[in-house]
Image (tube, rainbow, N blue to C red; front, top):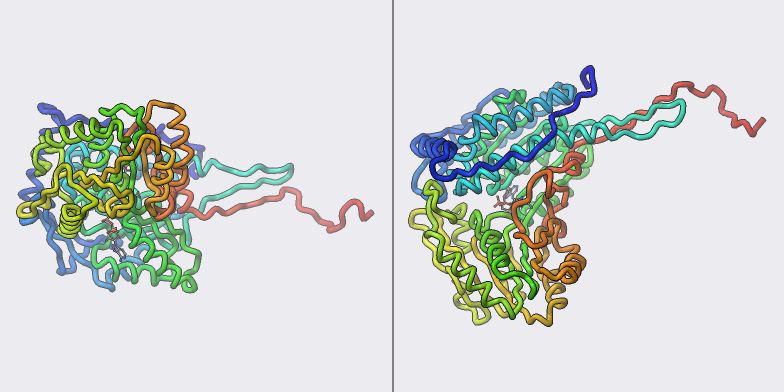
Length: 542
Ligand SMILES: NC(=O)c1ccc[n+]([C@@H]2O[C@H](COP(=O)([O-])OP(=O)(O)OC[C@H]3O[C@@H](n4cnc5c(N)ncnc54)[C@H](O)[C@@H]3O)[C@@H](O)[C@H]2O)c1
Ligand SMILES: N[C@@H](CCC=O)C(=O)O
């Protein structure tokens, strides 16, 4: 603490810019995109004050034009990861002892840099790296990232303010120490904001961090690093390594100073990491904190009283924005027989109004490419299987083409089997499966929704009947960490809908909340007694 009880600026959600034709932001972001497109970005490892070019590189290409190269990044060997760990630990004392308001100022400055001079850069880089449309880039890379930084600073001060009672003659106080060691942040490809937030939230609480971004997000990760540097984050606080995830992770988890994992990605990988940490448990100086937000099989259930146009829009936006590559994306839908045809006709009409999947540089596109060839091939396989299976039927889309970009047409599968494979498995792409239930089976269908998937991330109920809404809210209590009434299940906003799921979807530590930040501190209680006893005898002993 400095010399004062400082109050941080009140956090607020960054307004979303429109990028409508003729707006200055549209011109600026397209100019930046074209500059990146023609350029050749080179991304080193960031270890302490060093930018290491190992010479072993991988090229970066936009998913919507995978033969075009926009840069390369350097891959770490084991020795670089070990160096990153020792740099991290060397930086720990100075960073942990810096007064909190100085840390807060760095991250608040980062938020303002993204809101201003870096906005076009971080959005254009996200369009390039992850093939997001400008709207999807804006709500993620600009707005959500800014919100994470602003709100977390506020939550940090709320945590520090939380203090115990003190009885007469004593003073109890709690200091929120950073973890003793370093935090390892592993981030997914799909959200630039998550990539930035995972290392930043731990660092904000005074921790030093090793950050391993996804190979498919390095182009936009570079802008995050540039922002942190310009905001004045000292060298060695967040060390960035790219490379073979297995080697990097084994090396990191072998360190006795490993004290926390901040992970977002697939359920399978998270469970493997948990196992590895368990196997090494006797070697660590402290019990590592494990935070993981993982996969989903997110649902929409419509009641017979739901308005068909609203259900159709929730499906189209919830399932197909960003090509269904949000962990929150709707991918299994339950429609009542009485309104199913009308809803599906509306969905089909919307899909017909989309242009064919293409580049985000064409701002008329609603759907662009999926992230990489592995994802494309997996989705194509499920679509082909659905074409063959007697209990499934493709009623919209079903085409794909990877000759230029990894383009999968938004696809709707209709099944009579509520446990059909695409009703249960996370596909992570623009494919949604529909099951139609008898109106009379509403209560049974709620049980089905609850029992179909191992995940419990997001879900939505649409209805106008309040009793039905109440029934669904109760019946579906444990199958979504974020539950939406009369809305799509995507698009959580920091400060308004803290995000995370349970069951196989994660530890539900709610990214962008005080609850998450509490995982990165180890509180120390200090009790001070003003008049210290000098006799062991109680008064009744005489
Ligand atoms: N719940 C959430 O908040 C949330 C948010 C975003 C994404 N996700 C989930 O993330 C997944 C999509 O992202 P992805 O494809 O980048 O996930 P992924 O699991 O393939 O990769 C995530 C990160 O883990 C690393 N990784 C992969 N294999 C590893 C291994 N064996 N050891 C250590 N690290 C390893 C990757 O390099 C990457 O950095 C989906 O399952 C999605 O639901 C969840
Ligand atoms: N928070 C985002 C999802 C993040 C996962 O990919 C949403 O609510 O749509």
